[in-house]
Length: 488
Image (tube, rainbow, N blue to C red):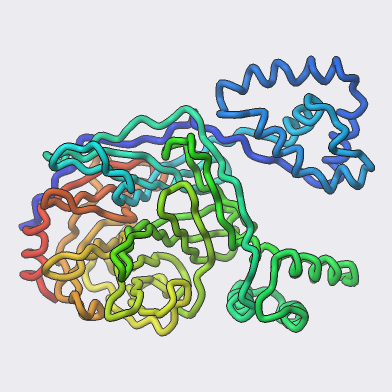
């Protein structure tokens, strides 16, 4: 007899109208041509072109003039090559030039799935039994580029879920590059990205044990000038791309959570940032911080990364290192275990592994925790977000892939003080795609990146066929009892 699981009559759908104004650059020579043509226009013509553009797009973006000015300023190197003094340009000419290097991107136009759910830092002004939560999503737009978007929701005492409407504006964060890098960690990661070893060793020998971004950039520029081989010049660029993978982003304080989008920033993310697994992590002193593991993809290689925030306004982002920081599906436990950070991963694409670390960004010595056991998970088993601590053990929602690449959700129970020990695993899927959920962007798939316990119920947000997102609920005590009954 299967567990009784209730599907909520609520869906969160993609919104193709939610657009972001992105910087567009199509090569230096093309940029020079555009700028030169704009420079030939008189001021009246410039004003006549930019004025209606500002009126047309001001209702679609929070501060379109700020966006256009920022995009114009990104062309500083091109202005120098053309001997154009940027500061001498009129306000309207800067805006017009910026508009030619701006395009709108609909971040949710293709798909909206793989949700993760966590406590909202703000739990003020709630009634008994209510909980305010933040739900993250993988949103996919043109060119199959993935980003992370958010919604705020309220769960009441009856576990009814109200997802608050998304804002009309989307804001891109300000980017702050890392100032200082650890040489050993940096070059250890560079080796895993398959950058030319000779190029790596050359630069490594010229850098101190801790070095600044500007120093690395200067060395790379000097080395490229001496290099005639275009392929090797590209290898130097890749090192700079890796440096760009360490950064901080800051959103404006006047934005709603639904207005904030974490869009691919570095070259190693240019094809998308996928499947963020958020967790509210409790430190030894009782304070909390939010982490998320996610996968950066450049079209060929994937890079596991870690995101950190306390307020969902300021985010710090860095790559993860080590033999255990490979492939996808990394999920952090919500607290240290026996004095160490703990993580579940699927480093070989087939089995679940567990690993421990003294440092949250370095993961070595993964040990196999689970392998496919039942027909509905013969292709692979993985996690669906961070383990949830219960009195009976660590509850892990899993995903299994079976015949016809059908994805289903399962559940496992791990020992509290030693999660390398599996206590039980459901013999049947916890949740499978039904006839209303199997058609979509990627058919026959349900998937989650994090669940939540509220009022004695486990609430599972899940993407259905990668098109939209829904919710399911199961009684926590009943689920734990079944896991113990099913055993191994």
